[in-house]
Image (cartoon, rainbow, N blue to C red; front, side):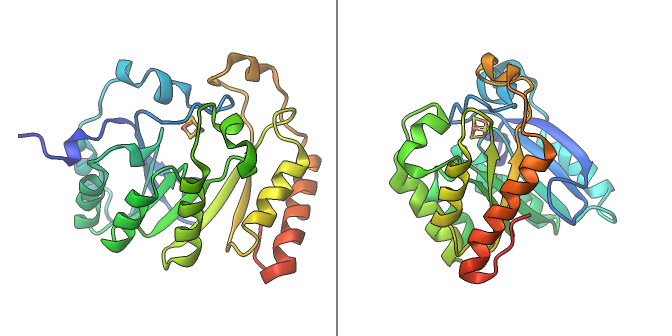
Length: 239
Ligand code: SF4
């Protein structure tokens, strides 16, 4: 019989990664489907064509995780958007039962799910994308978004006891530099705010594939300015 955990469509599995959970060797699970359509998203297959991708059986993943348990104690669940799946808590429980710590990547559109996962002690780390300033959120996400929900997720994460980071992907021409600083000011008391570089590959809006990412020195300058904004308030770090 299929369990609720099996109802979460797993479309990708990386057995070992050093980059998806900073400082940890982790396995990474990709769930299919997302409720946003960020035009710059480079996971367009997972968002738009996930039904065409083969499901990876949870039993296979668990078998591999058990085999590598000596080396891997961390699992990252990313997407797509994992919180759109009602079976997510059951899926995470399967990993917790194996004694693994779990990081969840989210777009922050389901604060109720975040609260439930938090209350059930199912997640150890949350990474939430903040797409841009809240007053233009639909532009960043490609769909209408109730920003009260995004605010609720940010508040829950910042006031809760689960370790976390916020992140923004900076896309030239789409974001203005001041958009990034506006987000930094909004979450100025956050522990961490990472700047992610845009990758012009396989984007939801194909025209974004012609955009050249910011040069490294520009990214460095933006990171320094963000760090300054955060540190003015609470010495938080932007990496
Ligand atoms: S970047 Fe946007 S569209 Fe892509 S998976 Fe994340 S939230 Fe969904």
